Image (cartoon, rainbow, N blue to C red):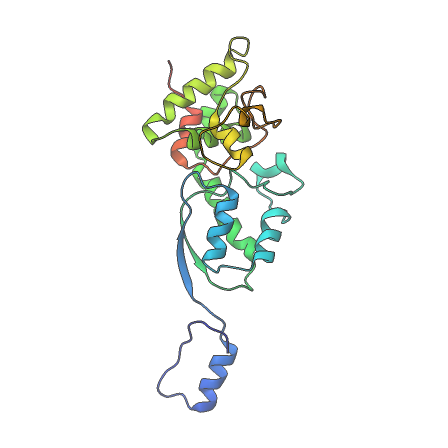
Amino acid sequence: VSAGTYTLNPTMDYSQILRSLTKTTSTTSVKGTIPEGYTISQIRQTLLENHVTSQALLDNALNTYPFKHSFLKEQKPPKPNWLEGYLFPDTYEFIQDSKQPVHEVVNIMLNNFDKKYDKQIKAGAEELGLSTREAVIIASLIEREAKASDEFAKISGVIHNRLKDKEKFPHLQIDAALQYAVGHNNRLTDADKQLDSPYNLYQHEGLPPGPICNPGYSALYAATHPEAH
């Protein structure tokens, strides 16, 4: 008998109870929250801690499953971390079952992104000449760089101003991107700033090659509606 939740009633005899316990699969569910700004690594850990699936099945779904969402076309074929930025932060109800098709769990988060990337965000991106991927990258920078949500639009304005004037501002100098590359959120050292990485925006010009976290709606909106300053 597997651990889980089973439905029995007082009229069942011993053989009926035994059949129910051996044939019924677990339906235990748990609510898990994915906060704004979580990286794919942190989301992976959250799913494992909530016993949603096994590590092997989860890694296979995150790194190799060929999801068909249109906003992922630019990133194909699948590779490690290719879903970074598109696993929408929210509270989800997961079934605790190591045998369930885990790509369905990931698909729910991707579908949520598709829903939340709404007409207002799309219109803002189009007006700024941004692709979906560029908008998500900028939103991820905003999400991790800002100390509070009321700074989102201002930071977005800084990023867009620097992108427009590359002669004066060849580097975005966003600490959060380099912190993503070095793997910590501490104050950056001079040695960190010499790291040879496309996420080192003190040396690499323009945007990093991909999102540095999974941004929420407010950051996505700010990325496509920067403050003018």
